[in-house]
Image (cartoon, rainbow, N blue to C red; front, side):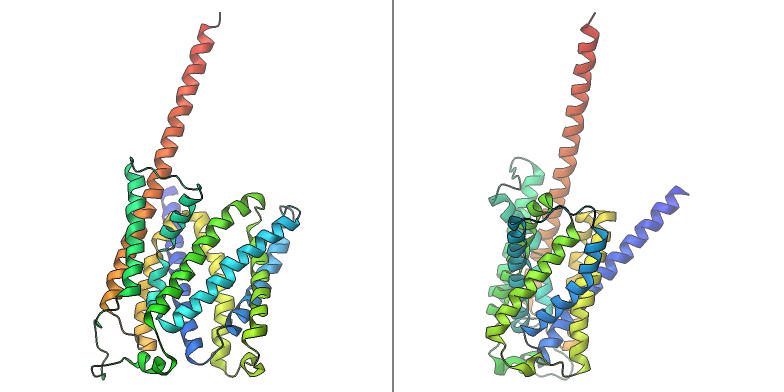
Amino acid sequence: MANESIFTEKIKLILALLALQCCFSGFHIVSRVALNIGVSKVVYPVYRNIIALLLLGPFAYFLEKKERPPLTFSLLAQFFLLALVGITANQGFYLLGLYYASPTFASAMQNSVPAITFIMASLLGLEKVSIARIHGLAKIVGTIASVGGATVITLYKGPPLLQHTGQTEGPTMQEDMFSKKTQNWTWGCLYLLGHCLSWAGWMVLQAPVLKKYPAKLTVTSFTCFFGLIQFLVIAAFAETDFNNWKIQSGEELFTILYAGIVASGIVISLQTWCIHKGGPVFVAVFQPMQTFLVAIMASLILGDQLYCGGIIGAVLIMLGLYSVLWGKNEEKRVAAQEQEKTLRQNLLEAEDKDKDIP
């Protein structure tokens, strides 16, 4: 009976993770559709964060009412910095990268975030690097593979793998769409790299903040609030045409609602539940599935073309991701064993001392 219950919980977790990756994948496609139909790159994140704040704010207020520590000016300054890195820079670079590159490679580049996070944490002394042990070597090799994959995607586009039916040799439908907008693949990938750096920086900065202020939903709500303020300041200079703030069609409304409700609301809830049930490593293992789903959706919906360089880079990044995750998991296992061994040794020493006492 107990085995059946564990099996059912595992199935629920896997289904939730699949749903999570589908939501993430849909966001890449929906965001590209929003850019295609002319939604402003500044207006889009403003509306997204308004919806996210309206969704998360009430839950944060009521669910964490008792466990919320008092706010200080120092904490508010840290929330502002988290918003600058995790919302404004993160979402801004993502939309710029998506505009010039493609949803498939945006998703592929995101797989390098764990490796970039490891580099940042190591430089700040938050992560231990042990070359002498296999798990330390795995993290280093995985990081090199991920960075190498991101470099390949950025610098080498390569020939197309498949030609869509009805197309002749030459630009794909998507390239035709953006040829008049000076599409630049390299700049797109560099923006996506900036997006990954911002995301990794947000995770590294968030860790010490959560130790001081463990109310996670409240931290997320404040981050969304300050991110919204920052985007509104940017919009005051970058988006002065009032017509760009108007929602012109049902398609535009759908993309904005999806970004706010699904990508910010449902995804955060699902991710939190999945991490609680399966742990962060198990959740991260499913990340590359998102790239596969995005590639299929982008090909069917947007007519995106897959390129040789992108595939090579994506494979390197995924191998690097799994190597880093394995290294971190093995490191935790070894640390737990050593801690248990030390505890046993201390207990034995304590017993020996008790025996010596007459």
